[in-house]
Length: 114
Ligand SMILES: Nc1ncnc2c1ncn2[C@@H]1O[C@H](COP(=O)(O)OP(=O)(O)OP(=O)(O)O)[C@@H](O)[C@H]1O
Image 1 (tube, helix red, strand yellow):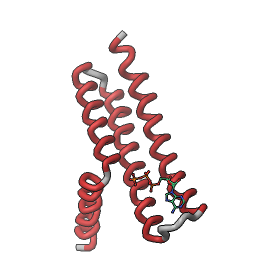
Image 2 (image 1 turned 60 degrees about the vertical axis):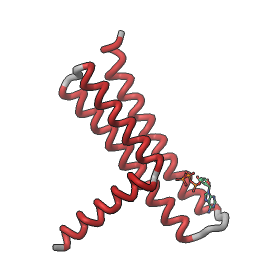
Image 3 (image 1 turned 90 degrees about the vertical axis):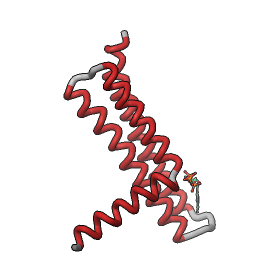
Image 4 (image 1 turned 90 degrees about the horizontal axis):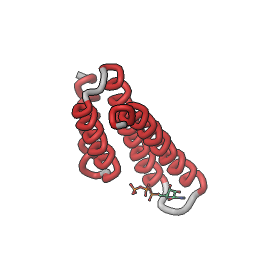
């Protein structure tokens, strides 16, 4: 029963991210595009593993970032250097994961295109 509740709350979190967080939905749509391009190019099984991992890594980073932003906003509405550090570090996590996804996409897609 407790496990079922945890699943229910996780699904509520995903629903909140999808409907309230523009960045999450943009990254999700980019992931859909990456899956479509992968399917069109007919990439190998191991390449699928990297593409899917990169997509999930970005979405997971975005979910944590949104969670951090919500927690910080709950704590303070005024300027605080620690609030800035927390939000900037969360944004850095999204940036790093996005960079990883772009590098993986370039390494996998470019040889199919040229
Ligand atoms: N309470 C605060 N104290 C200090 N700096 C803050 C504070 N709130 C936001 N900032 C700074 O402003 C930046 C943007 O914060 P904001 O909450 O607008 O996030 P965002 O990335 O624009 O997300 P969203 O568009 O989803 O609200 C943060 O990365 C941080 O540098």
